[in-house]
Image (tube, rainbow, N blue to C red; front, side, top):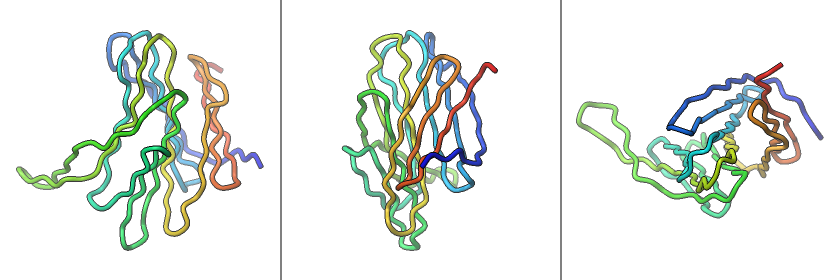
Length: 169
């Protein structure tokens, strides 16, 4: 069943490097979960990576499924799952957080990486979903895209959500 959700949406761009613009679209879907669509646009080549740091505490990662889940005892957890439109890998990174001068604590962090070998735009969809019991089955894919618009479908269990933007009316 297709659903056009009530959502808050933000689309912004950052000319990250010469020949590469990072466009990020953030959707807060029905005030329940986040969907982020990242695009690496331009003719620059090299490694493209998304980096996510987590609150200090235990996480479980599935590098094949590109998922990370927090494991707090109070059952207030999040599932982060990445859906790249091109081949990608996931790697654990060293990461720290500091709440006081000259003091740092280690935390889990992960990067979702892909090799950009030409001028084609690379896209990643990331879903950040709260979990307190059963982990939902999540699917996401870009349906259509060009330099001015993206449409994507995200499915949580059996519920599908249509998301996207159009920069030119």
